[in-house]
Every structure is written in C-alpha cells, then in structure tokens.
Image (cartoon, rainbow, N blue to C red; front, side, top):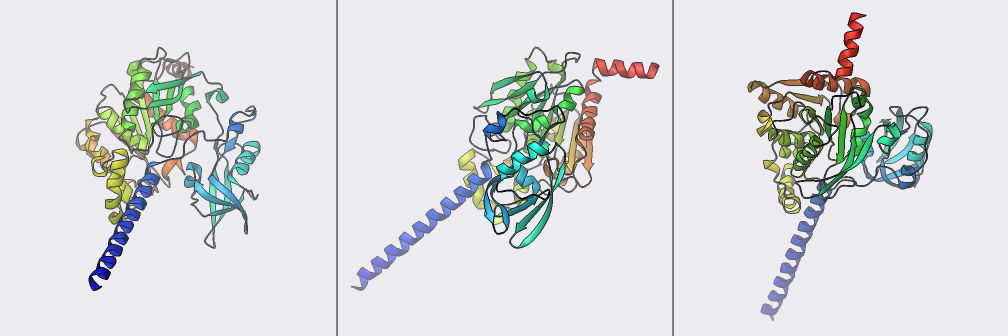
Length: 414
C-alpha cells in the first residue's frame, strides 16, 4: 500500500513540475512576443483615411492613444493597449484619460475625430490621467494628420521593395523638386513607428531640394514580416531601400543620404558600415548595444537571461551580438548624432560612446545634444528648426542644391 501511495504522490509531483515548467515556458514566450510585436496597419481608422478633409487653413492635428474602452467612474476612457502616441504621451495600460484640453471623451477614436476636426498640427494640449488613484497632468503634442503625401500636394509614388530580409516592404517615394539635383534621403523609422513618421518633416526636406523614401520596415505597418527584430532584419531592409532609390531616374545615386531614428538609427549603422557610397548619415537616439538598452528599459537582468533564448527562437535575435558600437568606426562618411539629454528609453551615453569611438578613429563626427529632449522627438526643437539643422548637415556634405546656391549668391550681390 505504501509503495502504491508513494508512486501516486511521485506522479502528482511530476505532473505539477511539468505543468509549472510548461506555464513558465508559455509565460516567457508571451513576454517575448510582446517585446517583438508592434501595432500594425494604418495609423487612423479607415473612415478617416477616406474622409474628405480640407487642408486649406492648415494641417489638422491628431493623436491616437491606443485601444480603449469607456470609463464611468471617473468619466473618460480606459487605456487597454497604448499605441505609439500613447506611449510617447506617457499613458500605460489601465490608465483612465479623464480629459483632453478640458473635454471628456468615451474612447480614443472619438478623441481622434475631435482633434482632427478642431485642432492643428503642433498644438500642445493638456491631458489629465488617473493612475491608481493618482492624477497625472501630461502634455499631448499633436502630429500632422497626413494620410499620404497627396495631402501635402507633393509628387510621389507608391513603392514596393523586395528586401534582402525576405519580406516585401511598402511605402512612398516623394520625388525631389524639379529644380533639384536629385539629392534624396532614405528615412528609417523607429520600432513603434511606420512610414508615416517620415511625413512629419517631409515639407522641409522638399523645400530644401530633397526627395524622400519612407517605408514600413519589415514587421511594421503594411509591409510583410512578423516581428520587430531590433536591426537583424531592419538593417537588410535599409540596404534594399538604398539599392532601390539609387536606381530611380529622379535620383542622383551619389547623393543619397540616410536619416534613422531609434531602432532605425541603429539598423542604419549596420547598413552604412557595409556601404561606402553613403555620403552622410544622421542618427537620432541610436542604441550602441541591445542588451544594455533592454536592461535599461525595464527588463530585469535575471528576466533578460530567460527572455533572450525565447526571443532568439522566435526571431533569430541574439541580444549580445547586436552591437552597433562595434561597427560604428567602419563608416567613413560624416555622421551626425542627435540625442535628447532626458531620453530614458535609449540613454544619451549610447550616442556619446559612439561619438568618442569615431573621434578616436579620426572620422568626421558631430554631436547634437538636445537639452530636455526625450525619446521619439518628444521635447525636441520646433519641426522647422530641427530639420533645418539636419539638412544643413547634409548640405555641408553634398554642397547646397543649385537653386539655393543661386538664391544666396543673388542675395549677397544685391
């Protein structure tokens, strides 16, 4: 009898151990998926994408905070899953948004429609949020509501590129103006963004004589792919985008520069290290190594050791091998690093140590540290001032476009 009960107890223990192990593996895999996935699709509901909206009195402003549901006490809406605008604002799952600019809304979509109808891009609106009984007063900066370059009356074409990552990328190529010499930039968006991020400054690029290729990277937006791979696939996407745009008849292949932000900036580093034809590179908030960045954004070190194998199995990412710092001195072209000194997602030292590595190698390098700047262009200088600084850097590398050079010459002689 004793032997029988001992076998039963042993069986129960084995079952419990297997169940516990299975649950642990499942939990870690779910965490890996949340780390690798990003909101996809269009940034606005379909009915707003198709709506006839006037742009005659200025570009409408928008913000979509994420998936939500109404809240009765207090009135407002619960954030279920923040999207990029929500994360940038500072809301988190479970927060209740009780007012935006003094008004109360039932959900994110109602707020979105109201903002587009009543506000313009670049406005900053006060937002009141309840979080576990505490009241947060936040500031929401509205982005331009631009559904495609057509809303800005810019010449463009829909683009599909077969990436070396194995996925088809989709995006837009905004042609350089007719008076330009064909200079063009490849815009590489961040991990929680899409091609639309490139449209926020495109009028400034165009005014200064530049074309712009902005595409959804693999695993983002309307491009193929499954995950954000923190440069593993994205660097191949950048290389393929460069190859495509250099073949375009409106482009001078010797004047194709690159702008990357966040994860896109780090991906651009790997691509540029193997591409000596890039004449200049501007990098906003790049990380120097992925392991440190993951640990600094809230993943405890002990958990990171458990998460890393799951991420590797899912997406082929080896955390401690993603180190842009190791190839930054292989880029011979001038590089401008841009980093907000209040960035807590990718700490400013990541740019600083790469700047130092390039300076030690005697490579042309500039550093623009933005006081109070946070991640994702938050608290950065006004749009025109920011892009003029970046475009001045490119013009120093390429020379000024003919029209601008001629106009400045006429002003001096006048």
